[in-house]
Length: 588
Image (tube, rainbow, N blue to C red; front, side, top):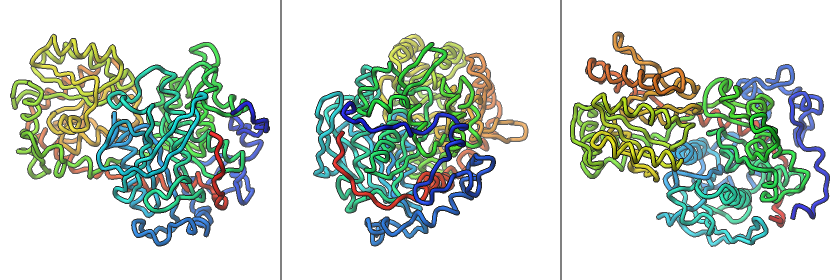
């Protein structure tokens, strides 16, 4: 397909801030340079504050008549909003159907929060299994990937004001327990197919009873799996087919969709677009294919899930080779600390805690309810029921980015401290095997539920554990720490990532302050020291420990404020969206 397209793409966006300033970024309707807009100093928008000023000045025009003609007015499920938008979040996983950690929770929570602010929101994810509660939309679509015609169908559910659409096809089936598994090129082909299917959803059928149309439509892509979306949208804008814009959210910069440049043939784009995917890596000593780099370049806005100016991502370690590009796109980079879904993560109403001896609990009843959950977890996993022994947990992806190797190195020391350790997650096969061996070695002290991820078990570990470990080398949001604290579970986190610094303050038992423990470098001995201090407080300062739990449970980690900030980024990405353009006959 791509070889048949001969149009020039020499106007692809320049690669540096210098080139951007020299060419001027052009808004679709008013033809003004961004450097002339309010909130921009010396040619650069200064974070969210600059965007807030600019978005305020631009947003009135963004709610144009064509948007309302596409069906927002009269929809009883959408509350009144001064400047509503069409938002489509696209993610490789979405709770409760698929969830390996924070990304799945994010994909379920942000759409609901935005819908609560009056926007019309859709969330799109693959359908990996035969999930209950989904209705077949009746829509079928034929897409081409690597020269093969593949039929996709769409299932839907309307929940809390959000239309959830799950894309079904043979490539997604039978991988529910390991959605990122398989050979690299097989995974690449799945994500190419998913992005092609997702970008077409708003124009295919009246999901939830109405068409979304193209006006005021902003896609939210997440990580490399859907970083192709901004590129495909650029292609459609270049062809005059669509006017939609995109925001790319960074959750895990370590995974980038890298490969050899010959992988470009899988994405079905004209040859002139290959420069967007071409990335030189000094570490590897040459050019390689990089989907994340292309998404960062072509998205209108980029978000990372933490406060401040995302310092970590601009360092060689934190940026995982993309730090130079992160610096280049800093003008459109925002840091937003995520919230958590307080309906999903609330020990008072958690449905996973109302059977098998578990118990719901609140701040007033946690002294009774949390010990019940601990005992139930010990019974369920075949551990000795010992109410006084500290129970340490880990829930997440088994990956070195998550610091799981540090836990493996520290586990023999932990086993000597008279504790119990529970690990839940899937990921690298060598780490799965290692934790299986450690469970066999330490018998009644270690349980490794590895090779799969269970949402129910994740909730039960969070409720039953006394301490949860978060040794991530690079973590952008700190969502799981917030979930742990909602359940009165004490987090031990690596302070080298900004997400943890934003959510956890070190505990000081003598003045009864703080929310958790931190260690300052990705070193197993530092992890051991932090856990040792935590165990000391658990055993020596029982009253302070309960106050510690109460402080964590008393926080307000809801999505309300985060959704407001995302709204401003979406308005900035939309930039006076041009009038509605009918969807054409897409060639891929």
